[in-house]
Amino acid sequence: MKKKPTLEEHYEADILTDNAALNHYAQCKDCFFRDKTTVNGKECGWKKGACKIYEYPNFKPDDVMRDRVECEYYEKQKC
Image (tube, rainbow, N blue to C red; front, side, top):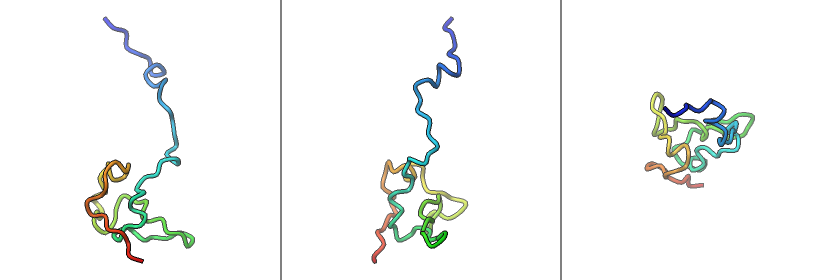
């Protein structure tokens, strides 16, 4: 019977991150449908999982969050 790896062995090749380096929802930054919430004068709502198309309780697809695919509803903000 094959020995089951320990937790340390299972994850020894993984690189841990606090996700700060990831650029989630990058395509949403200039989308017309983004959430335009601001904090201290800086717009940050585009980083949310919801927008005018994907309203709570529905959220943007995981592939859109991770920028693997372009959102089918993406529309560039015009000025």
